[in-house]
Amino acid sequence: MSTITKSVDVEADVSTVYNQWTQFADFPRFMEGVDRIEQVDNTHTHWTISVAGVTKQFDATITEQNRDERVAWKSDSGPTHAGVVTVHRLDDSHTRVTVQMDIDPEGFVEKAADKLGILDHRVQGDLDRFKKFIEVRDGHETGAWRGDVDRPGQHTAN
Image 1 (cartoon, rainbow, N blue to C red):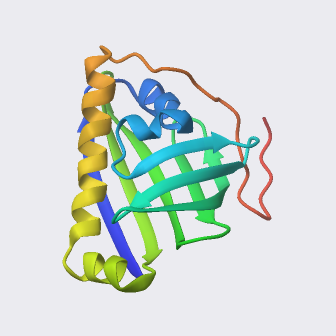
Image 2 (cartoon, rainbow, N blue to C red):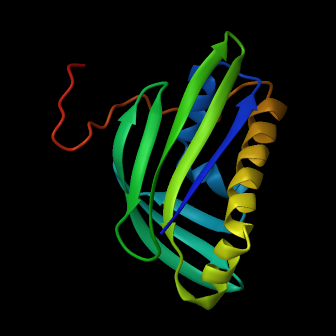
């Protein structure tokens, strides 16, 4: 299993950046290899991705989500991975987005891509495209989901 940690600073306030990150259906607009994401319910998504010309599908569960702070997930099927995206306010109009992913590549091509650092570059490229995506929109998100998902075993008052 490999761990990837990448960050990017975005010229937009923390709420706008967080709101955009909750819009999973828009991920194909800035994530390389992501063809489609279907939001099944508040905590479940179905992904269709392309890797080295091969289409794969998998399900993922949002394991924790806190407004203007973080979104964590884990895969339920397909490639084994889990991660967290955090948003940190730098000032009123700048936000740092950090992605930390644990991934267990499947098959020769994915394992080679991991060893060669291609997965690291892909995650950074996705973050850089996210930055451009939101900044070109003059800091306006395409939508928002402001609910919370408690980490298993944790309950918060709303």
